Length: 425
Image (cartoon, rainbow, N blue to C red; front, top):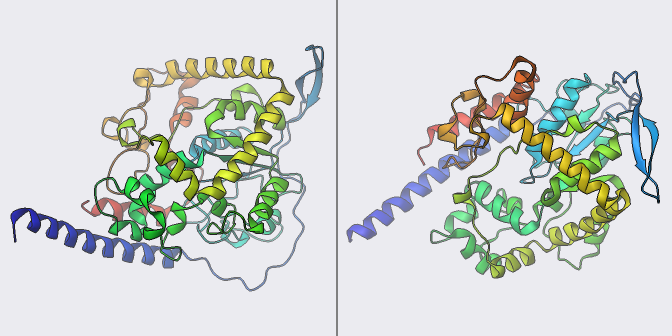
């Protein structure tokens, strides 16, 4: 056996051993985290809202056909279901929701012991930390596989349902990079460029019954509780899209995140200051695979249901923008960018995100995918004035640290983090 063949053999054996260990650990963690089965649960009406309602109404600027504004008043909507889809800038939006919830002293429905609601199982009310029938919650926003009836039994009837989508080709590239090592059928894909090889013949590699396979086909449709393996012409696809359309008042788009936030502000009667954000959980550019036009076409063909879903809501999104007023939208987006730039200069050391190895505070380290440190983060300026210090820290805080600060016990997530760190990839 040549030296090169010996190295390849050792590498393959190491991969099999580590893969077996990883899978065993994941199955163990999943079993430990499986919620208790509730055969039946009393049906108790949900209170209208448990929010501390603002005492003053806010002016709502509206635009008439003559482009003149006239004042109306509204109260901020505080009962919110945010369907947190995967790899869609949802961690950035979660940070906005966390700060809004703290500002208005709202009650979050959080998971227990981990940062998701036992995904990929369908959401059940019993998965909510300390849940009892009839309890009142304002916001639910952690990862789940959507189950409309169970969510409706948890939140007030007038809850605003919000979600976010991303171009399916870009989402697939991101998901393949982030979750690929957690999907066993990818371990047999040869070569260094596994994404390209997979898209060359996805049906050859894909195992619909394989562990975690849902991450790599129509992930958006799956997140909404639908069957991600349907054929595109199956009537259940149209039915699923209608199901989502009927339940969500606003479907935001990652590619137009700022415009999405302005529509959110208008729909929920929020203030511009509620929308301030820094981009969280972003990957460093060197780890992003640039899809050629051919690969993009193949990715969209492989994720055809997600593409159909995205195209549908892309149309409804721009209908909302036109109704809002394109000139007015441009002005508001410019104002949001100005305020975000101002916060960047106040809060962020160097004015930009840095690689994980350059983050000075452990408390500011974002969660990393297995095998690498590709997720970037920030350093908080050391001389931030007292009036901005708390806001800056909150805006820069990664999701898991913020959840911990809000009182969520993440022992399973943290245990998995230790297992991930111990494995020498």
